[in-house]
Amino acid sequence: MRSSTTRSIFFDGYKSDPEYALRTLAAALKGGASNLSLCDTNGGTLVDEFKDIVARIVKEFGAGESRRALSQRQRSRAWP
Image (cartoon, rainbow, N blue to C red):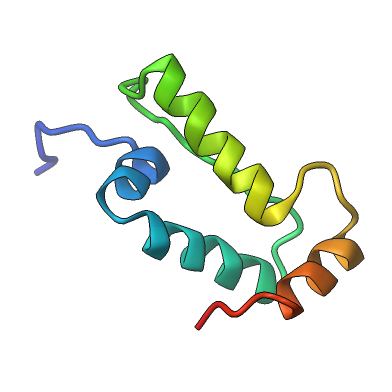
């Protein structure tokens, strides 16, 4: 039986624990992901929240960079 509570997979998780969400994205890239898809499945994230969160992700991981550039950036980070 499905829960009647709908959650935004990435954005709700980020709001609950931003550092864990960032480590998860870093692990995805380290594991070979070629892009990061951020899901707001229920549309519950307000526009200003969305902009702030995406800006943080772009700051941490870049936007539109090649896989090689992302990989080099990740190696220089101190993510556990």
